[in-house]
Image (cartoon, rainbow, N blue to C red):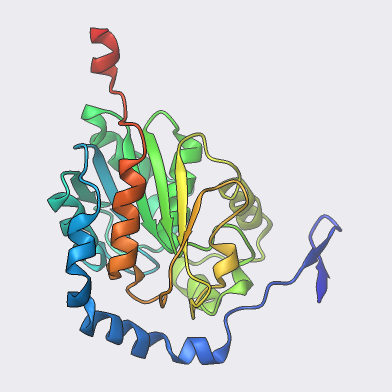
Length: 251
């Protein structure tokens, strides 16, 4: 099925995940937690870090507490890891219309060079927004199950998004901002996604210009999944370390 966009172009309609996948979200997430111990060896074998500064951004209506496993794992790998420090993620209600509060937080952590952002779901969209606005502060962006590359109605949570953020997904200003966020980033980037996601269509969590890693996962607690943790560590290890202003001055 096709539909007309605001500018008159015909675009494909991407359906949200099926009701079957949606209903399976919680059982799959709980099973992942119950079998987490099986993957300790692969987590240990993932590459060590280079000490770069990393910020983890939570998903919709979540706080830094939702990323505690991810943050502890990356800290153990040798990174300087921080939460976003802005409470619950309610989109622009939390970061400002131009992401001012988020950018100020990133800037406060950039004493040793640009900061690498890892965003879960809506947190990934916020991370891409910050990278587009201030490329001088962002060393790289990893999105995890983040539906940045397609229409909000290709998710089962767009109504919750509207209630919690106060924005309407069909607002022209929101559409324009989303188009910018989906554009190529001025820094290294990677997308981790799952075609079995029950809340957001996996195909809108990646694009043709961004290196992508496919995992098998529910959306709930995807950032705790061992396959995702190891993928994040592997991606980070393959990126060049950020260069600080102090390092450049010393050359």
